[in-house]
Length: 401
Ligand code: GTR
View 1 (cartoon, helix red, strand yellow):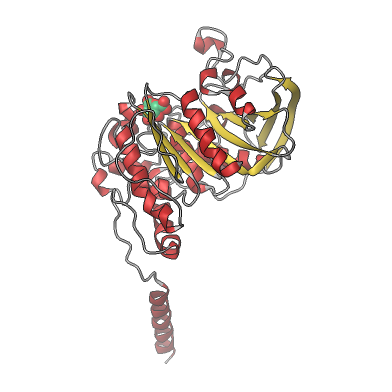
View 2 (view 1 turned 90 degrees about the horizontal axis):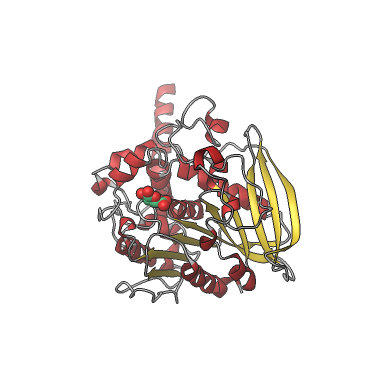
C-alpha cells in the first residue's frame, strides 16, 4: 500500500512537471534569424535556453560566489585635460587578490549633475590611454623589461578621444584587462580565477578569460552605482576586438549596461561562426585556449553543431540598444558576418517594438544607425578610432540625452 502511494505521488509529480514544461518546442536555432511570436515566448522559453548555451558552451559560467570587495578612491583631481575634466582613480580591492583593479575615470569638468558614461577595458594599461603623466601605472601592466623601453604613456590615445567625449558631456571609465585576468594561458594561476578555484582550474563549462573580464566589468559597474558623479543608468559598455567580445558578453549577462558596443569583435564576438570567414572557432581556440570555456572546443571544425550562432549573443542584449561596427580591411573579423549576425538578432528587438537591422550591408562609412540595432563599416583596418567613437556618441545621444 505504502509503495503504491509513493508511486502515485511520483507519477503525480511527474505529470505536474510535464504541465510546467514550456509549451513551445525549443529547436536548434543555428545561424537563422531569431523569430518568435511574443516577448513572453522569448523571455520565458528561448532567452533562458540561449543564455544557458552561451554560459555552458562558449564563455563558461561565471561564479555565483560573492567576493568581498572595497572601493578606495585613490586620487581625484580637477583641471585634467587642460581643464576639461576631473580625473579620478578608484582601486577595487577584491579580498584575496594580489593587486587592485584600478579604475580610471575622466568626468566633464562642467557637469551639473551625474553624467552618462562610456566604459571599456583597455589593452595595455590605463596610462596608455592618455599622456596625462599622473595616471597610475598598474603593477600588472607590461614592465620596462618586457617592453624594452619605459611603459609608454599615451601610446593608445588615438583609441580614446577623451576631449571629444568631455565636449559631448560623457565620462570615460576604463580599466586594464590585466588587472582582472592576464591575457595568456597560465592555467588560470593569475588574475581572479584563483579566488574562486583555489589551486584548481575551472570545469569545462566554467569561465575562461573573456568570462573573467566580463565579470570584472560588472564589478566596476557595482562601483559606478555608488559614484554620484556618474549616471549609472546610462552606462554604455564598449570594447574593441577581444574586448568587444567581452563587452558583448558583459552586456548579455548584466542588464545594468544600458547600451552595448562591439567594435571589430569578430569571431566569438559579433560575427557568425558558421560562415568560417576569417578567424574560425578552430583558429581562435588554438591561439587563445584561455579565452573561452573548454566546452567551446567541441565546435572546432564543427560549427554546424552550434545550438545557436553569435546572433544569439546579440539577441541576449535586447531590448537594450546595441551597436556593431566593422572595418573594411578587417577581414579576419568577417565584417559581413558581423552585419548578418546583427540582422539575424533583429527580430527579437522587433518583438519589443524596437527597430532592428534589415536589408543589405551599408556602404563603407555610411552607418545604419537610425534604429536600436546599429551598424557601420568604415574604411581602414582593425582598430577603434575617432570615426567609430563619433558614431557611438551620436547613437548614445539618442538614448542618454
Ligand atoms: C587577434 C584575434 C582576434 C582579436 C584580436 C584582438 O589576434 O585573433 O580574435 O581578438 O586579436 O583582440 O585585437
